[in-house]
Length: 451
Image (cartoon, rainbow, N blue to C red; front, side, top):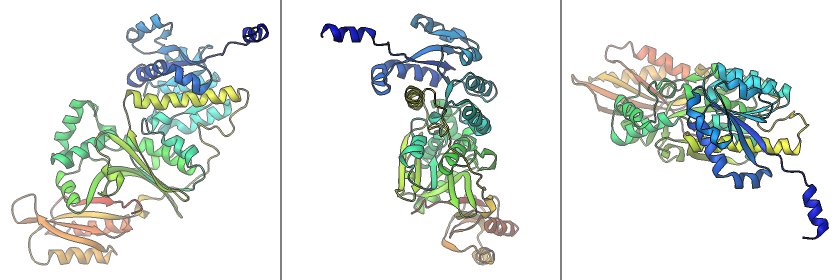
């Protein structure tokens, strides 16, 4: 190197690292630090500057005392990180919706961009948070809040940006998918598989959010808003869980060429968008139906590209950390390229939103699987068929199976053509009053997913 070159190198300013504070040091927080440290050289090459974790907050500070040995400031007060002048980006992975909301809004008010994996927080308070971020000119990254390690928000925001999204459907809760997969492959009932899922760590001690579809609804509210440019509308999602599912219906579905999955589905229609989470029969030859275990999968239909499928780990320390770190890098790139430009069309949040009506569930048109436990006597099938026909419910398949109970009870299983939800409800209300029909009558949606 010549003397002049050496002098130029000597006066080059040092590359300023992107300083990150992590709030919450559980599974995802620990995974995020691990990924940032293990892949620091690769991350610096891609971003053009290093990312350094300067601060970590955790309610139980004794859990993070060891981080002091790595030169990281530790805090028991989450707001201390949100307000710290030497933190550029705040990573919120503490969970909950009360203190987490205060932390995120405080960071935004301090002019800091935020990355969060907190789908419940965004489903309930996302509009307020995104509006505050836009006013402050900062970013909100939330890839990790939906489907863990699958970069589905980046797909919608960038990869499919030329498309008009027509619909998307996904397996977006790994716990429920594990339970349904085990019920199908082993013929076990829901309670038995749930206990096994809890033993293996797939399900929480209180599994309500997972098995009642609430977690999937949180994620669907964000996916739908990204896909259609609409506000987050969690409160308008029709939500059904899997707790009431019986192994016999999973077995019957298999014999008919279907598998049962808990789907989150949003579709654009002339009257509004559909927003629904519920178990559904999916054709067994559909790739989505073949995604088993705790995996997530999302099928997106674009007008130009057609259907595309994205499959991967929907939870876990490092799959979720992968999404968190990707958002940090995206924010770092923007701050490096345009540090003084307010993100009027922020690449990590929503652009200008438009009000979009949500179609009432009664107006949604799908096909149905119906199972009627009935007394085995002449004329029962004719009665069922007559009532269904009177409500314009046409049948695509009908079969009879031995009942699950003794006493001359058989199961009549029906698949319908596409029909309004309200018509099926009206027909079932009349059918359930028949003396020959025993409870419960089982109703499940059938989704062909463009097939």
